[in-house]
Image: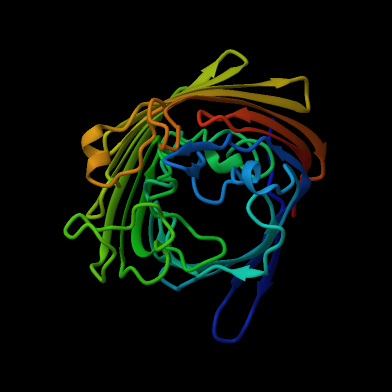
Length: 369
């Protein structure tokens, strides 16, 4: 089922430049969600919960409602111009406001900009970069949210998300400063490549992550965090194979990823695997169109246990046998249904059961413009 992003384009002509393009696009989503929350467990008299930060599992303990209204409105502004030499210069910025699992309301926020220069099949990007590990093909679900349901449901389906160490890689931040860096993208025929590099001084973007300590000291300091990443992909017939790697001087952030995705008749299939600095996670995914307007996605992932040595060195503990751990070891699975309403709108519904014991269900509408 084709998903088309409709955009509003304005062409601006001035005496100093032949043509500049300003494109405004975006989407809205709204609906209802339910989360069972994680069962409260006690260890040494202290209550603990599973799941990664701000995922709503605390609702099983603090008495908050397990049902939520989920909504987001996003506007994206893409600006570009072409030089006399044929180089396209451009930038992107976003603003969005949403409600969801982790908060009742949120103020309108703006992203830091991403700038780029493109010539032929080569693009150089700086600023709030996309990130090579974020951009590796075959990492996200084939849905409008790129995860389950309306808001992705914490993207448990992503094999790079393990052990409360979620999104510990560079990505374009839609409502914040992002990870200031530089990247290069290249495509030629069936081949594509993407490399990225970023440096963070520890003052902003990563301070809320679960393991923000540099390897050198074991505690949060002014030592810069440095990330390097690369992905390579090749498409042959109806199949795409991809690999991705990340190297970081911060603990537990080194990653390796491989995926293969393609078509078997009317069925889309994908296999993905990631080594998350010693924690393996596998994913099996399938999707198919039902009639002319419906699509269904099914997925299952399996997250291995962290090593006792890493836990002793300060890493989160995901092992099921340990009462004080986040209990993320094991199998997660889900289903997503989409019905095309036309005009860039669709009905979306999803359900998932996470390895840490949380059940979520969401349903609502998404429209693009």
